[in-house]
Length: 506
Image (tube, rainbow, N blue to C red; front, side):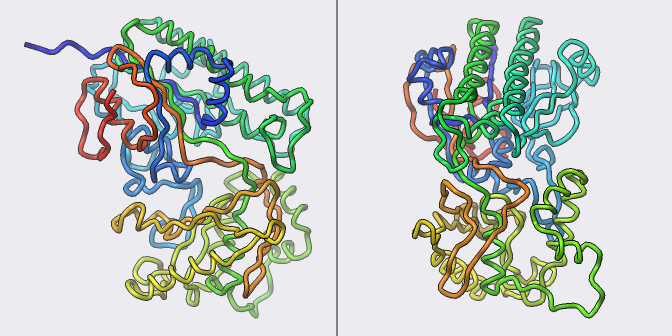
């Protein structure tokens, strides 16, 4: 006797869906379709170590593979065994999405799931990087001809970049474009759902991510110093985008088969936080962990001379206007590689925008590592933790560091060598922190090129209902690595050994 086929599964992603905002808008009636889904099913928050970093969160969500194994954690990482920086891509992390485990004969519909690429050999339609937040690469599709079809009817790849120096007119235009893109994507996805039966549909809206970063300063929820007074034209701009996504969620649920299991999920949330990346480097420099090279007798290069005589703000403006992202990254990598005397460094900070990524210059792992594994390594970690604990923000008088996390303790001793040794979570402030004090030093950071007042939380949101999902209410917090196994169970497919998480009982 053969078992009956599993009901179709429809997953709808809200990229970087701000969980607290969602909760408020559910209560106020602004997200009626999401509220109706929760009412007939269940909801929970996602957490766990795999959400400590925003980059790579979608890799862990879709693959069920722990970050300890895939190692992708930031847009800029140190290449293993070198002091070189490179720009990794989530779709190259070696963690295939859960639908790679499905029988290729099952029909799948995939659209704009972040940090993924189309998988050849599967029935259905797959579209990647067409309309996402900050695309990693050019749009692609499977079958390849699908990209041309989508372009003819719905338009080419849509890139709506964040603009940190936008005027109100610029922001109104970005808001209009985001709203239009939500509607266009909804029309495309409804057409796909109406074209025939499917086993899996996984569609993600990235407008929530871009819109929240871009428009947060206008929101009545904003508390930071760059906020706009509540009476403004974009005060409800973020809510408008979420309401538009909610309308498309309702239309897609209506277009799906009656017996479909439906899941709505966000990756991570949003919080107020100004960039703090310069603080980690200043910490390592000023406290002697990461010494600069001795002054060279050679003549300084033109770039060195320019850096000395051109003000920082001018250099930032020139860089943004004249250089591509790749060219700017090459400069960052060159400055990082040559800006430290590695033969004397005990620890160093990898360049970042927000969280601090600290690595010990470990013998046998780093090319010129001088810290021996074992007791000496532990001693350096202990001193780093103690020094970080001594940092104070003179403006508030409070400790500057909220948490210092040893990645070995969170991800295990066999974790990917791509991960830093310490992850520093700075205490958020409603202003840009230019200066910190330590009993032995003073730390300063200039205003960086990348400057905005929002970052991400380490929790996400899930709502679920359908033929195989009971009316179970609020399930609390569940580790994000349990999502991919849950999706496979709903599809009646076995969980591969690469996924350690247990399915969520639904």
